[in-house]
Length: 453
Image: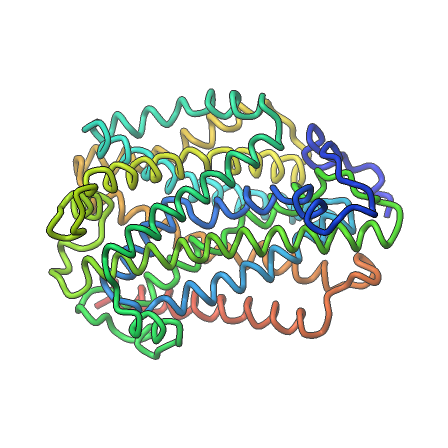
């Protein structure tokens, strides 16, 4: 295709820069070389948006929504595998491929939606960072939000170390968060039988709330939006091209796809477990309590300070680790958000701007609704965390816009050749998209009824 030949390489500064061992190398040496992009993607599945939706899901509905986390994670693994194949086989990221498919005018509309999704992701990062600063240092939320405008300098510092070191740092963060919450859940003594039953979908997800508040569907969609994130689809299809695999032979391409999917599934398994731990922690500490006193970041932080709840002399340390992990999670997601912004801007509308400038503009626009909320309602954590949840619901609504082109392209033999999706993969992809669209329609109807009542 002529357009493919003229198209610039995705993330040109890191494209085809990471060496891999020879074809005779062992499985684990190859896996280590290809490992990294999956970690950067997985961070997006455990950002502050995931934290609050999972914690509140557990606080309000016990272990009921574990099945939603499981389903969301399986869908995520399916979609990220498709992203790996798309990037490796076509040499394009999802934004570039979508522009080729839809043309200039259509791609501009899709670019606007992708940018709004990145901003919605940014809302979660800003709120998580501001709350973490408040918990650690007593900093007012407004000041914490304004400080996040300066994280562009943190980004530039991180990027100067190179992609491979960033990947190693991110994986270390994922492992640290996992160890912290695994230990905290162990101290919370959850009901193992209820946890196992929670992985089986229940009809209560679609019915009225057990506590008389909003339907569990709202939190369920927030979990889906926070777990299967649109920006990760664009990001992964680009990052897999950073490896120096053999782009000219079928064997080289097949090897790259195989190890990229291994990497992705391994890292997403970590994020799945962490999200389950967050929900279990919320359920163990808060389920059955007053709905007005449930599952906010500060409440979980103070609960972890209370020896009567966690039963440990290290309770103060656990609370501090929780806040540090929240701060690190928000800041770390900044790196992937900026990379994705570059990918969608260059891929959809062929516009290049300095990374610091586009990051500052995106962050400034994302902080605006938070600043307004704090200005009108004050430092009320319930208000800005409510804003965070609704940002995750928006991501769920925006997701089909990136899912549909991804499934269409990777299921088309003219694009993918012998690497086209199998019939089973196509069926699962279509089913996932249909399910998500159906849930969103139900949410819109439910919200309209509530507003008109």
